[in-house]
Length: 141
Image (tube, rainbow, N blue to C red):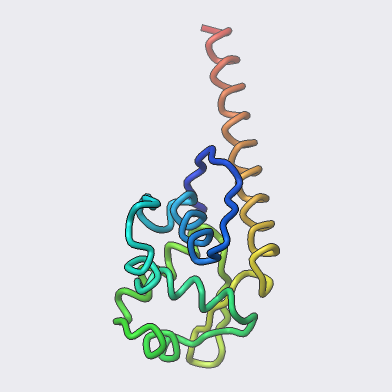
């Protein structure tokens, strides 16, 4: 199931890339609403933020053990955040023998985001068809 939060927000520009990333992750519903007055350092030190940054810094696949070690977090926490990113279709999964590995879809944020846009368009098209069906069914009643 594809799931993402769509919020009408302005494009984000900032000299601090971590702040832009935090806004982005907040805007799409991956992290809690980001308050600019909130301490950015607490967000930057969180597992969910560091996980996303892992995927931004390289196009390689990350194994579960690598990620839990690098993020200094539990498998449960890691899987919770991986599953949220998977539901947004931003990351892809590779079965490498007995181990699953993850990276941004197609290896970079722009390509990954293209997949999200396709999913959003399909979801909106399905809503449109449902709206048309509601109207048609109301016309016949």
